[in-house]
Structure formats: structure tokens, C-alpha cells
Length: 153
Image 1: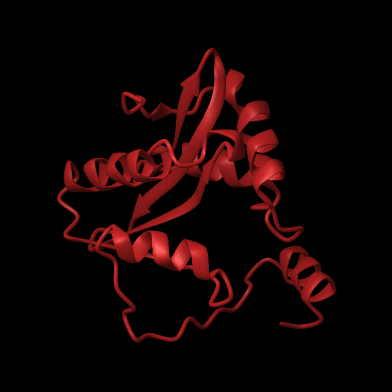
Image 2 (image 1 turned 120 degrees about the vertical axis):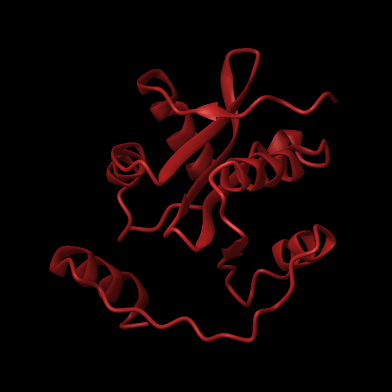
């Protein structure tokens, strides 16, 4: 398969991206996807990139940076198209997007229980950064949704 082109998400792509995330189990109740997409699109240091096949969204990657480090989120590929290089192409697109903006380092978060995805990133050259993620919700509604869904953590 020829690697697909990843382009910034358009209004027409939003329903397809959300449907893909639903199929992939990427969505979380405390992260409303429409709002997350709008947030990516509203800031010059982030974007949501999508790839299409026969007119439908088959892969996504959210990318952004703080001027020093880049991050990716919402890396998702159509489950029916796994093993065709879409995940690698999504990460290549994110890395290229960040490199074009002078970002020197890319970091990402993976749930420790998601061993297949950890293996995928390791095969791409990513390694455990030996850091602990700590968080604090600044939005009370998202904090409430997070605590309801996770029992507090």
C-alpha cells in the first residue's frame, strides 16, 4: 500500500474521525471528541491530521507542541486496514509536521496495559522515558467526568 497523505482535518472529516475513534476504542467520556478537534484546530501549535481511503477517514493523528517538545494523541487506524502501514504513516506525518516547526523531541502517552501499542512504538524507535505522568484537571466538568468513569483514577 502506498502511504496515504495526511492532511489537516476539515469540517467534513469530523464525523468520520469520531466514528473511527469509536471503532478503535479511543474515546474517553472526559474528552469530548468534537471539543478536542476544535481545540486542535484553534491553536497554531497543533493540528489534527487525517488520511483517507476511498473518501473515508482511515487514520488520524493529533499533533502539537509547546515550542520544545512535541506530542501526539488520537493515533488511530481503521481496524480493517491494520498491518498495511497506516500507523507508521501516521507517526511519520506527525514527526514531519513537528520537524517542519523546529521541534526536536516527540513524546507520547500509552497506557501501561496496552502492550501491543507499546510494542508498535518500540519498533518505530520510541523508548520509555522513565517519567511519571501527573495531571490535574482545570476544567471542573471534565474532572467530574474523569472521576465518574475511572472511580477517581
